[in-house]
Amino acid sequence: MVHLVERGPIADESLRPIGEGGLLLQGELIYRVGAFSDLRLEAETLQATIIELTEDFVALPGFIDVHTHICFAGSRAQDYALRNAGKTYLEIAAAGGGIWDSVQQTRRADQAELTRLTVQRATRHLRGGVTTIEVKSGYGLSVAEELKQLRAIKEADSQTAADLVATCLAAHTLPRDYAGTPEAYLAEMAAQLLPQLKQEQLTNRVDAFLEQGAFSAAQIAPYFAEARRLGFQLTVHADQFSAFGSRVAVEAGALSADHLEASSDDEIRLLAGSPTVAVALPGASLGLGCNFAPARRLLDAGASLAIASDWNPGSAPMGDLLTQAAILGTFEKLTAAEVLAGITCRAARALDLADRGRLVAGLLADFVLFPTADYAEILYQQGQLRPAQVWKNGRCVHPSPARA
Ligand code: NIG
Ligand code: FE
Image 1 (cartoon, rainbow, N blue to C red):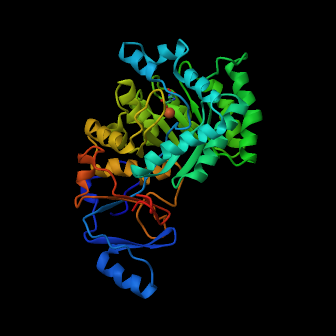
Image 2: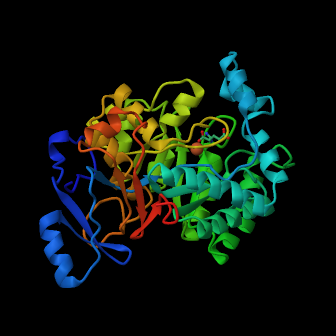
Image 3: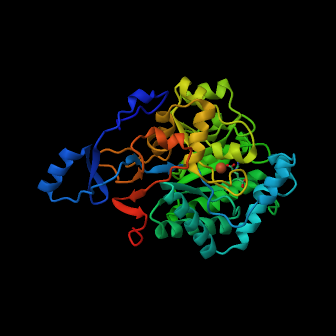
């Protein structure tokens, strides 16, 4: 497929699939993409390996999920039942359920258990074609417990073929056992946690949940300023229920503003005029039973749109990126090109990863093979057409070589 524009609408006509195409790999990189007959000649001269596929396959770049919370223990099935019985997400949180419940369950797990659970979920994602997974902390909410989560994520990264991109979400909500003000909590995290993250190379990304019941724009400003000073990249949980986070994201130069279910024309304009990538999280809309982010209007205004799963125990328990992206496409009237760009090349921008997200020479050989001759089948089947093979860094990781 061709190079897709970085922002704004994309017509499906701009996707020009290569018929009888193939990929030539060298080590962990893509060496050439083109017609299979040309590649075969080149492979012979280079004595490179060429993989001949006997059936019809469509190759897509490995999917990139730019927003997950898969490092957690326990379940919040009870919250789901309460919501369906009429309570709101914010009411459940205020009554001591919600994020705080997951914090307590996650604190009870040790680091090895969190590693195991994260690897288990990453493996499920990998089988679905997701080769790069952002993973947030945010269920620790003390210096020691946030470190435990981020060390578990680093350890999990070394135990899965997927690349895990860690993000510190110590600014998820004020923990109920913290005796001071939100300002004091954030100052403590900025002073004691952020430098330690740099020292142990646990992450270079910082996120915050900007919402009533979480943190305000004024509260987060000094925390973000310190994070930036220390060299962290920023991302924001923005405009989920109240629309003020995207302005903070844009003004702070965040890589992405995620959620956006409550964004209005003002926020859409703001995001469209900025380099900040807008991230829709359809899994959170499906988990909470609320409206989707205004993906169509964001694209029409000229924004760059990525789509992520938000996989977490509370608002987005499903954790199936392809299904959710396909469903968002049907509700928001997105072209296949826009949906696929949202989980590949535009997602790579949201994580500032220039080495992946497209099938072009020189980038990582991360790709997914779907068992179909027509790429339109992939979204049409709304996640039920599963990858036949998943390749990461030039190696087939699913089915695992032992089982292939
Ligand atoms: O992205 N909105 C805040 N944080 C997560 C939910 C976390 C949770 O409910 O445990 C989200 O939806
Ligand atoms: Fe989230």
